[in-house]
Length: 157
Image 1 (cartoon, one colour):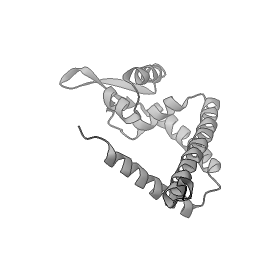
Image 2 (tube, one colour; image 1 turned 135 degrees about the vertical axis):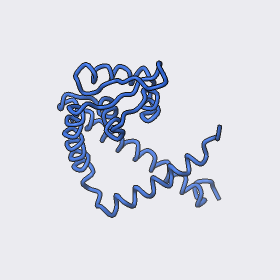
Image 3 (cartoon, rainbow, N blue to C red; image 1 turned 90 degrees about the horizontal axis):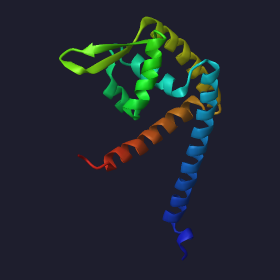
Image 4 (cartoon, helix red, strand yellow; image 1 turned 90 degrees about the vertical axis):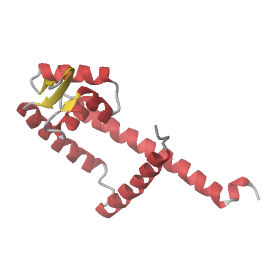
């Protein structure tokens, strides 16, 4: 029997097709979202920074913000600089650590982000409208299982 006719080979091919489909859909949706955000005078990285800060009303250290977003401190610094210049974020010193800075959204930043987040959610909803609530919940569970498996495989420090 050839390799392609074994059940494991069929599953392997199906998982490869799944990966390629996930990648294609992710790229298409991300491209649409980037374009939509440009029309709202912002960028996806800036939206991501504001989203992270909105989930941390007490603020985040710059290093924690970089970790949450999985990007370098340099990438975050430029975005925070612009948000601060526009009055949408503020940097505050961390008590007991002269080198560390805490970043938080200003009230105007929180208001602006709430508007962007609502428009973003509506756009994502429209883009994924072919997926029912039940299907979405099932896919979320399946993808969570994949993520959990990947996390479990990561080497422990």
